[in-house]
Picture (cartoon, rainbow, N blue to C red):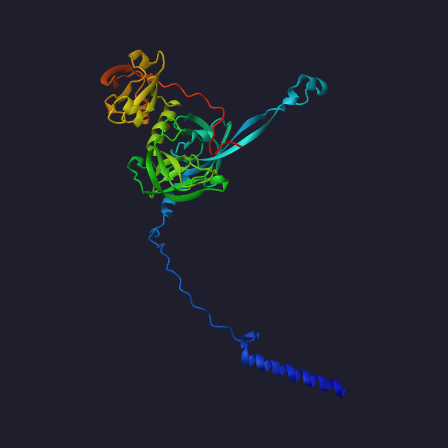
Length: 394
């Protein structure tokens, strides 16, 4: 008993000594030691004042105004799956019977659109809804509805669909013709299906043509990120007004590399109004094939500059052929307006109403010649078997 008491006393003495040393040298290790005083940190004063003033350098107000009017567009179509060539062999079918029939599956695609009217009209890209047999619209507030196609214009890659819904938020058209290089813009859409997204950039260039994207081109170029799923979405200014419909990108990977293109709001509005009124777009046509004058061609034709459009071919029986226009003529004016290149010529002719008699000026054998012709109606483009674009159905 004496030994046990001695061991207890020695152990208590050692523990008290250790406790004394710890309390002296590292008191913060003891559980009952007082902690450090609360650290005081600086906190920024909220700059979203009660008066509703926007934050400096923020475009949240523009996004707040525009985002409710941008919708997700879900499309689908029935795609037939061709059977293996072996299954088409008569001997194979005779042996196994007709049990191997062609199958089909539903292919889906994703894009965006912009509500432009309280009546339910929505602007989007033609390639977003092309060949789709079902179209569903999803609003930012969570509402969904089936949409029907009012009409489309493949040559500008624009389309109008309509939904029967009430209390629709609509976007205000801005003045795209007054936009300038360097202006800040926001691109709104549903990239890769992640949900509504806003990206920011500047206008990199205006009046982009000869891109090989559409027949009629007058693009706004921007470095705001545009990705698959953004097609048909809105390009807005810092006031939240629509200045373009996002339509294409230049990319080696399928994602944004900072080169995106939007159809100007002024063009989109003109096309939209015609589609709503008539279901299609009517353009003028004279039946010629044109190309730009290169410096080499201008030199061969003894032209002082490359202004004008070279008539490379004339459709037999077309308006130009009937008026006496010949291959090799250089078209320099249309109805009094100067032709600088083939793209400008195409726009000038397309803007003329079919049936109108106009005067064009051509250079033939280094001499200027006036030709009167009756403008025809531009034929509809031939349907494409497969439209290659970032939002192609998969």
